[in-house]
Image 1 (cartoon, rainbow, N blue to C red):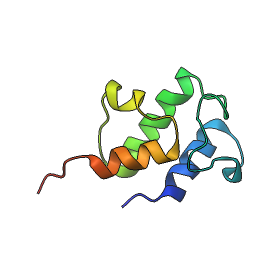
Image 2: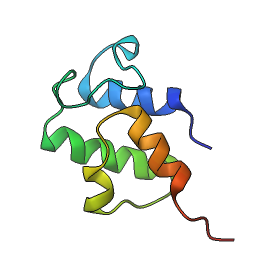
Image 3: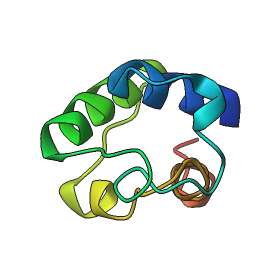
Image 4: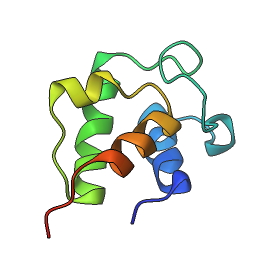
Length: 79
């Protein structure tokens, strides 16, 4: 199971910022300067890390670690 810290580390790695700068509710775009290329890189890293695929609609909902964790939590699980 992916943790908040795991997502924070992925974001920090993609954006080349200190993980301490990536709070649970920190906006990827407004506060950390993520652009569309960073977002694509982050989504690929996230998919590899958690073994799930995300649609463009899913990706559009991700603007913070909290958003990512909610999306993962609310996804239907295949038995």
